[in-house]
Image: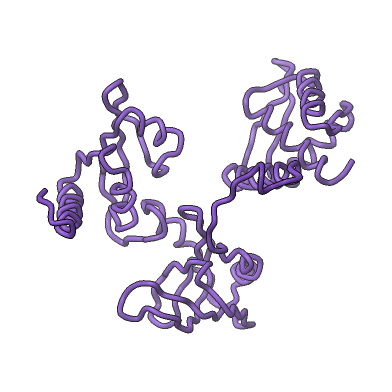
Length: 303
C-alpha cells in the first residue's frame, strides 16, 4: 500500500468514527465502499485495523478505544482536533487535485498572490527553538509604509481570513505584533536565543480577538441581528469561537459574541451589508453609522 493510501485510510476511519461509534464490520464495509468509489484499496483485516489504531494515536494524538458494553470502536480523545481538521482538509484537497488530469477544465482556482508559505518551515523552526529572526517587511498602511528591516522574537503562527501571520515580539519597541507572511522577504534565522515566557501570552492575547488585531482592553458583549439566509452561513462558519445563538426564526437570526470590536471586526460587519444589524453595544452602532456616512459623502448621498 502506498503512503497516500495509508494516510487516506486513516482519514476515512477517523471520519467514520467522528460521525458515530461503529463495530469492525461497519468500518470494513465503509472502507470497501470507499475503495470502489475512489478506485483504491482501503480493505483491511482486524489485525491491520488494530495497527492503524496505534498509528492514528501516534500520528494525530487521536485515541480510538473499544467500548465493550456497546461492542463498538469510538474516539475517546482528540487532543489536536483543529490542527487535525486542517491537515485532513489539506490532504483531501491534494488527493482531489491528483484525480484531475486537466486542472484548468475541472477546477477553477482563485487568482491571487502567494501566501508566503515558503517561509513556514523556517519560521516554525525558529519558534520551536526560540531563535531570533530578521526579515524585510512591506508595510501597507501608516506614516512608515514601505519596506522596513525587522528584528523579532517569533512566538507563533496564526491563520486569519485565509492568510498566515507571524506573531512576534518586535525588538524595536517590545510590543507583540502580527506580520503577514506574504509581505515577509529575506528571512534570516539567527543563532541567538530569546526568553520563552512571551510564548505563554499569545493564546490569551487573541482569545477575544477577531482576526490578527489584538486589544489589551476588556472584551465587549456584541449582539448582531442577521437575516435568516445570512444566519445559516454564520451558523455553519462562526465569526468567533465565543459565538452563541440567542434567536432563530423565519425572520431573524440573532447571535451574541464576546470580543474586541477592532477594525478587522468592523470591516467584517460592513462586508455583510444590509444582511446584518448591530443591536449592541451603542458605541459599535455609532461607529458603523459614521463609516457608512463617510462613505455616502463620497458619492454625494445623504444617510
